[in-house]
Length: 200
Image 1 (tube, rainbow, N blue to C red):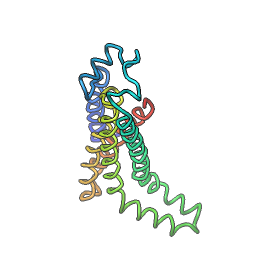
Image 2: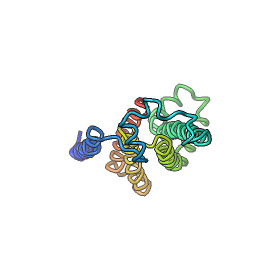
Image 3: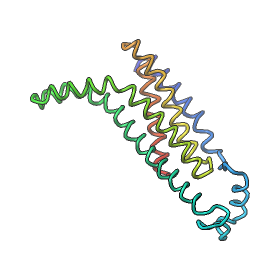
Image 4: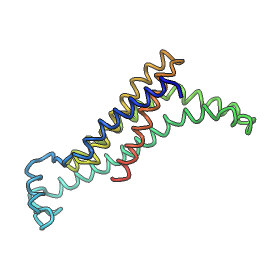
């Protein structure tokens, strides 16, 4: 491992630690302070709010369900987009062995590589967009900003930083430093995103 790689790895670890500290000290915040006070006083658990409650009405309940389902759908769309963008690297690395094993599929493998190469940036941008909208919808639905929301926000932020280095990598394809930073931030973003999904 050369000195540049060690420096990049150390920098990513330091950034990760700085971003993870809020996760352990975070207190849940609510979109509506009144709801927060009632939540703390136990009215949510003592029958103070019912789905059919006159204060909220059935229309609000339906709207919340739509927000929740839409947000969840966008969240899974994000996972699929990340998978699509991330498929480029392993496919590129294994393309030679795949062509040797399946020589008849060479044209299909090459075409898939070209397609993923051309659409990689757009799929990555779509992942960031979907995850951002997902976060907003889920926050509007749940009205709180706790551990799960912070982990999701950090994951999206790291994806955005990785995207900046990815765009710079287009102009400097041979720059291994940009490539390492791009991959490093993405790997950390995916790990934190996985935690976010698992605790959902």
